Image (tube, rainbow, N blue to C red; front, side, top):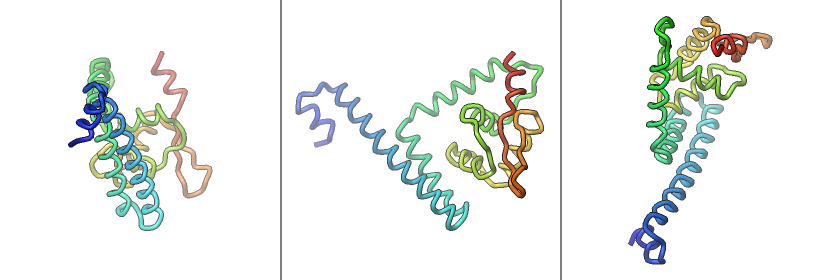
Length: 169
């Protein structure tokens, strides 16, 4: 007998049983995704990016399993952006658009490591350090990001709020 059948036999309506089980499934999968992501961070610190990539990929897969409608929502958002894009502006590559959207949404310091983690979580191909660096530089060259090099040997990118405000108006 399945958990759904048990819940129904206890007198729960079928729809309510489905809702409870769906919420529980999402909670369990999200907890497993958090654990896999933390393991990826630990592996990255000890063994490097290649060792951590599988754990981060597993985390992403578990999150998608917990929320299957996320992919549909992301596609709807991409379609909306495409419909409102002005023909005078060249379209951003999908990877750059993803990166820019996350920088605008989350803010803060963006490094190649943070971009690599984002690409793994979003199942982007080839999340190499050089790819992350080129993408950050491309957004900087377009004026979306400013670079902070006050710490020698470390490059940190942040959202250029002046550029963002100019494009909203």
